[in-house]
Image 1 (cartoon, rainbow, N blue to C red):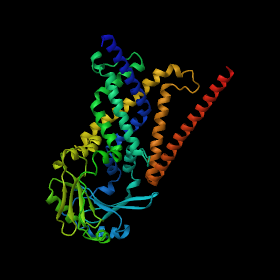
Image 2: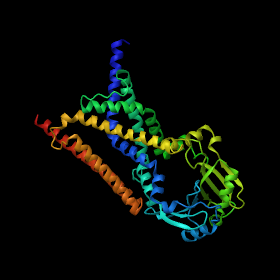
Image 3: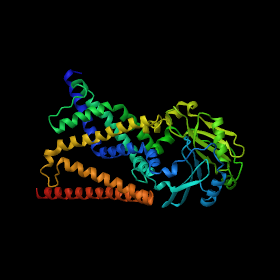
Image 4: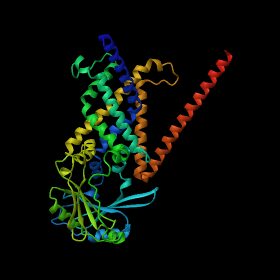
Amino acid sequence: MSQQARSDKERTAHKKMWVVHNWVGLYAGVVIAVLSLTGVVALFKHEIDEGLNPSLYKVTPGEHYTSIIPIIDSLRNVYGAENHYQVKVSPRSDKSWSAGFLESSGPLSYKDWEIFFNPYTGKILGKRDYAKSLGYAIRNIHVRLYEGLYGRQIVGLAGIALLISTVTGFWIYGGFMKKQLFGVIRTKNLRIKMADYHKLIGITTLLFNLVIAITGAWLGLQAYLQPVVVGDRPGTYKPDEPVLSKEEDASFSIDFTAAYKQARVLFPELKPRYMMPSTDGSRTLTIMGSVPRTAFEREKFLLTLDKKDLSEVYRYDIRNAPLGDKVFYIQESMHFGDYAGIWLKILYAFFGITSGFLSLTGFIIYLKRTEKGRRDKPKFVELKPLLLRWTAVILIICTFLISLNVTFGVVVPSLIVIVSLYASILFLVIRALVLYTKRRKLRNVASNHE
């Protein structure tokens, strides 16, 4: 192949990559920006939740934990022993424990009760429906955009869009640093300035965006990918024949304080977080927690005990698991950066903001590039008011949905999003068909006159 032919082929490939990068960024940019900024907030949802509810979380440490059997048994009488429940403990001595009960009588009636209590005195500190909490609302808007049917999959597709945008962007602008000193931003006009920022930030945050894109796509599309790639979820405990009836198992009284202490003895590195009793007749208590200084998903190390004598039945230590299990359980921790303390979260937050800034600069570049052709249109709006308008709309929508969630729970905002989204898609499809039909008729009329 001649040098000219090779050069023409490279220019053609470059042009195709630019078209893909341009359209993927344009159509998915708003979603990526929303996910980036909500992801930054979601990083600190636990800290925000505890800061807003000190009366539920803060306790004065005592010398010994009290028995919580009376607390749990009384709560089971209120919320139903047959309902799935768990006890949530804290690795910090100055934090409360809580019992969680799911209550659902249908798809429109869902409550996730949290009852907080002092583990030293047994005093009830308060209760709430976690489904109405701000922490739940923050995660819901990031994980599924309040679209209750296929929201996770939509977010997963946004992860694929970010991956395509990152790869094509590097393909297009990979030689940028060779032609221009690192960090130099030209100020000839706004378009060139934003383009330089876009290229510089894109290349600087390349590795971070690749990690977020790949893990985000996996987490969003996991319902479809896991059965094909992995099969059953790794580390799931599968009991043998039931030793009790389901009714007997559900009503079995457990000394959770003793179980917590036993877990610390049997698995000293484990920091227990959740204790979940079985209801399938296996007569087991599964304790889920984390092991410090490991980059695996939080609370996915398991220790399963026999409810009767608290002897060990099953243990799942990801450190000793096969490589495939380790890859599986590293996805979420890599996505949220919650495995190495507050400073890593702050670093993730910084990079998350830059990812949103990539979408913003890309949008500005597109608007400035097409500004000349749009100026003659009746609905033309200048750049600054247009950006302010879009920002205000996004903030108002997010605030509105979160307010509905905190007030009424997740069902109401989810229904609003579902109806609005699919009604809009239906309207656009019908509009496109009508316009297409009109154009066909006009062409036919023109042909007949000829």
